[in-house]
Image (tube, rainbow, N blue to C red; front, side):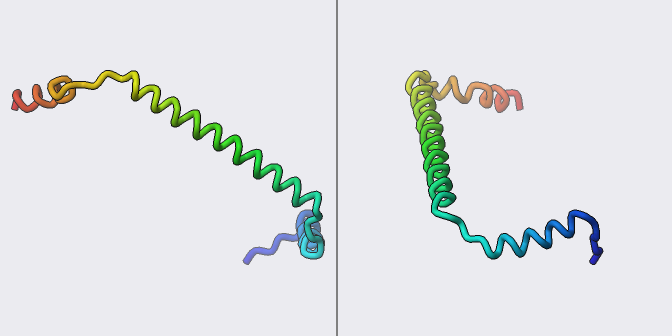
Length: 80
């Protein structure tokens, strides 16, 4: 395994020992909770918009008859 020795290695070693000892505070936990709630709200709005748009497009779409839907395939079969 290649050993990296440089200014970054010293920072990483120090960071590891610092992060192990620090536990998240109540403020950090609340910030994460608020961020998660906001992301969930944005995802829900996006999902609702996508479904609504899909249903509106399906409602406005004209139902194709059998001959309209399969006409290209029937033409290809007739040519063979």
